[in-house]
Length: 308
Ligand SMILES: C[S@@+](CC[C@H](N)C(=O)[O-])C[C@H]1O[C@@H](n2cnc3c(N)ncnc32)[C@H](O)[C@@H]1O
Image (cartoon, rainbow, N blue to C red):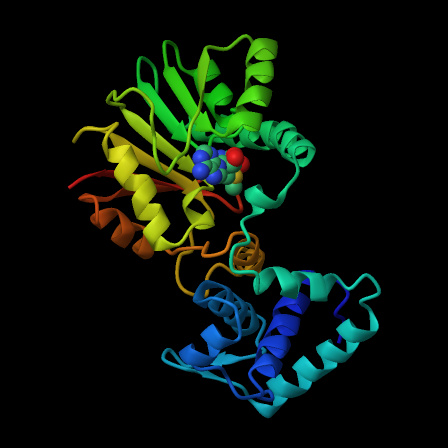
């Protein structure tokens, strides 16, 4: 077996092993919901790792419950031995420590200079996504509000392609500062607002579109609803929500996205990937429903939600 290039799989196996150990159990027994809680992780982390085991055929799911065969167990033991031998930097231990840290949220843990670097790198990535998104939308003369838009790569691409598009980006202090530098450099008309997406203090104005790119997957359902309730104040029945993120097609599909789910849930405690049905269910709480979806690239899909 060649296990050289599957770090995300190794992380899942290692976490599974540690969680079982922490509740005094041995593989292949699976943890009950109570045991999950007592192991210090949360439901989203535990299920993200089980999904990785399933899509890599290290655990069976029969549609209802998870089962581990002797073959699965042998492969897991083999991977564990390889991982333990090849972990000189204790990267799996560090990952596990993050997973059991109940307050871990990536953006609260990084330093100001790391936040600055992140925001500079994020611009190009989101600008390139924006160039594809722009092909699917007509935002000319439209008013757009993007929450958590970081340094504005997506917004810049959309504004450059759409005349008279009024685009506001809400984020924290450092991304907005970096975003204003890019704004000058690219000579685009964007507004950056330093604000909290959970308690928007922006002047209340309706928008034609509200954009959330890679935001909802950072948070649990309760926090997502709190963000959406804030958005409602800035919308009316004609407002469309654009959700751009790694939307799953079903619980175990597609595999390339499932592989990223555990890191996401560990880096953002409570965060999790959702299927399009789960996102639709989330939006039903604010009386919005699914209208259409577009595949943007190998990771991102864009879901359009409209008032019911
Ligand atoms: C996962 S990043 C997504 C950034 C960008 N939309 C993208 O797709 O690359 C989450 C963004 O939300 C911002 N953010 C997190 N919590 C926030 C809060 N409470 N208020 C405002 N912005 C927040 C972060 O600064 C970051 O820019």
